[in-house]
Image (cartoon, rainbow, N blue to C red; front, side):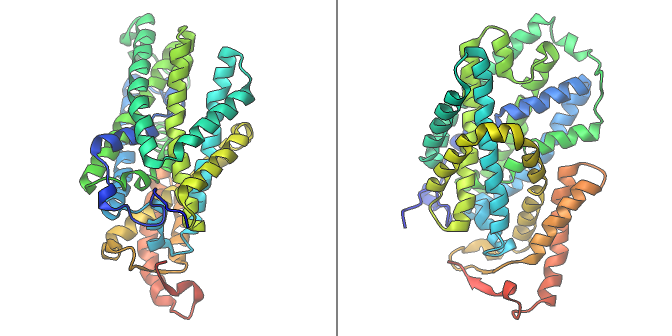
Amino acid sequence: MAQDNDFGLGPVPKSERKGVLSLTLVMLGLTFFSASMWTGGSLGTGLTYHDFFMAVLIGNLLLGIYTSLLGYIGSSTGLSTHLLARFSFGSKGSWLPSFLLGGTQVGWFGVGVAMFAIPVQRATGIDTNTLIIISGLLMTVTVYFGISALMVLSTIAVPAIAILGGYSVYQAIHSAGGIEVIQHQVPEQPLDFSVALAMVIGSFISAGTLTADFVRFGKKPLNAVLITMVAFFIGNTLMFIFGAAGASVTGQSDISEVMMAQGLLIPAIIVLGLNIWTTNDNALYASGLGFSNITGLPSKYISMVNGIIGTLCALWLYNNFVGWLTFLSLAIPPIGGVIIADFFKNRQRYLNFEQAEFKTVNWAAIIAVIIGVAAGKFIPGIVPLNAVLGGAMSYLMLNPMMDKLFTTQSPSHVIEPNK
């Protein structure tokens, strides 16, 4: 079997761990995404100035806590989300979260390629299909080089997006009469605050569940917590502010659309391209790790195949699959809740992955995910937060009960050595 330099089938060795700055840029590259700006635009036009910042700061703080716990686990063990799932879901039971997480990321990759090609086509007249093929293949090629390519790309993209985007927002606000004008705007169709909180958390909880895939390269678990909080609390907040300011002043949420309206065509294409490229490469990288857990093949080759599939299906995904992807995202938060609950309940099991033994399928984890989805859908409150807590709490109750109920007579409860 070809060597897997992305460590999709085992822990990241201490010698391959990365520094705080480089991993922070990678995680900021993940959270710098146009879809977050669209959500920010909806929040900016549906909330008062004060409520907008309250919703964004509280929501991203909760999102940051959730992803930081996963980041802590990833850095402590050096394991990807999918290998971590073997402990709670079982060796073959982990294929379910890997399929959901990996498939969702391939879908979002295709949507992201189309999100770049369509506005660029409107601005330049270049054929959409040509733009999709070129941009999709470029994004696919870079993911071959793994975490190193993500660090290089993010080092370029993150400052460029922050500086060019920040300048554009400043110009837009200034041309509208200053920040005071925005502060006194009254929403025509107000959003309920709990709905706004759910939008903030839900905007990135799907990708956030994959945090361990990236910060498992961190040298210290507490550094991983810091990295993740910066990315989700600061990076995601910045995207919401960009979107809200753009929507309030120009009617456009995406900062690249604002820049095009300002006549800044080339900077707009650069910002849009880098914005989507960093997130899409993170998505492809994570999808490869997911399907590597299922197939046992090196993740970088799977990531490239996924990139080709996502590119070829980009327009179809953009037009038909966003609603389905959103539905799939409802099933993802409880997966993170189960992983977190199992680690902090049984953390001694995680000390030696090579010697670990797993159930084939742990039905307690799968049932807990179903309960988590139901909690998110039917219990009043913040949907993704209810889903995470529902999954975690039901797993902690079900797992010991089902261990007592079932014995090794059941094939799904056979204990397998790690392979």
